[in-house]
Image 1 (cartoon, rainbow, N blue to C red):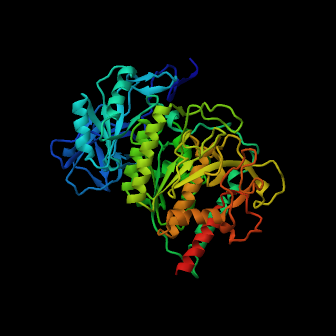
Image 2 (cartoon, rainbow, N blue to C red; image 1 turned 180 degrees about the vertical axis):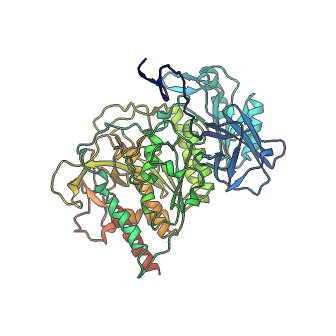
Image 3 (cartoon, rainbow, N blue to C red; image 1 turned 120 degrees about the vertical axis):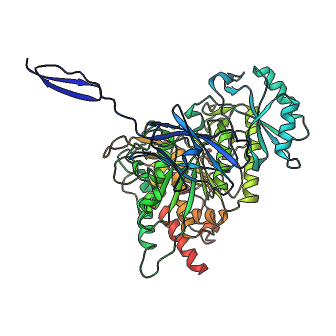
Length: 594
């Protein structure tokens, strides 16, 4: 018998004279895919957590938290994961990862803050009269400030035969599981709850069970008009990286930088992608200026991986290149925490945001938003992406209002960066768009642009970039940034596919604001906006402070943002992000303070 080569999944067997059959199973990498707080033990000082992981064996497992291995007595194994407890009140939120033999998992950020809400399963949702998927028996109530939220939530639960299953205590918001079986019963109970003197608002979720796309901005066409050019040149991305690493390390006048924590409201990140494989385990032990904490995703081209990659992807591996990771030579340390808590829609986004702020995050990236049914585009067409009913929108608006009031009262130096949206609609119409329509110093709204087809223009020219057709617009948008970015890839050296949408313009601004804060952590939201707008380049034609054909991309640049010079050519134009100039103005302002 001749030489035989047998190809089987995961193996190649070669035999002479006889055929050997063997199946080799490639072991899964050790990755944390989910975590959540479990029920609290009878001892109030003990907190229980549940972790789901792939590649996990029931032996030799070490749970590393705050750079220390948890005692085996605090860990219990279960199918596909484990549970563990933290005892006493001396613990604080921090990185957690698993070690098994020589294998190390991705690190997650284990928050010990108390905000968490429950997501509905496929059996707990239904289709309402608007054709939208909605939760049947899970709702949240916002309790009036004059009441003790926890106590009042328990009273309401007893009165209406419900159970308290989630909470956002700083916002006096509590999630109830109702004893109802259909939407008619739910809506009747919502009316009764809404008439309670102690209830400020009732929040319902119109979200598909476990659906990643529901909480993301839907992207437009993948290809920009000039696909072969780097879209980030329009924002001086590389110039900004060069400026930060050279100017801040200058021997003549070095600048002390400060660590900044960034929160990204996304589900997960693919740590198998070369862009993120270097962040496994104890990131800080590797002297990396940037660290990423997130649950592991199954593929590299999902929304969370791309958004996070714009901030923190490793360089020179193909795929993406992160702005903050590009600053590592001079970086004080950026913690990028990717977390959504659960898949419970907008309420989960807010709960996770509250936890992250309490854990020290200074900049929150919100690459998400929703439209109310009936919203129209600039062309007069009805918006059909990420729409919600009026009932849901009213609850969301109250919840978001509570969040921003809490932020202003308790954390006035935290900023939220939000995508304008991709419906060719208006970002400021509060009855039809959330959360970008909120007017607060702490909320920055980002529109999207792409490179124009005009050749030979200087980057400063307003025609160098043009509005991305799908981007939402108007006076509420603070600034535009490049809407297209390369995604991560499964193997080194591959070119990432383009992903486009305001979701991907937003982290460019988030990363820049974090870098500016690292130079001067005392900057207020008002000062950050002033520096961002003063440094901005222009885009599109002059509009004389009024919308022409519904085409104002951003709030027009004012004379006060150009040294009170009425004749400055930038005045009246929309604003385009200039990352290098913003850093330079930040350094200059720091020199004046000194």
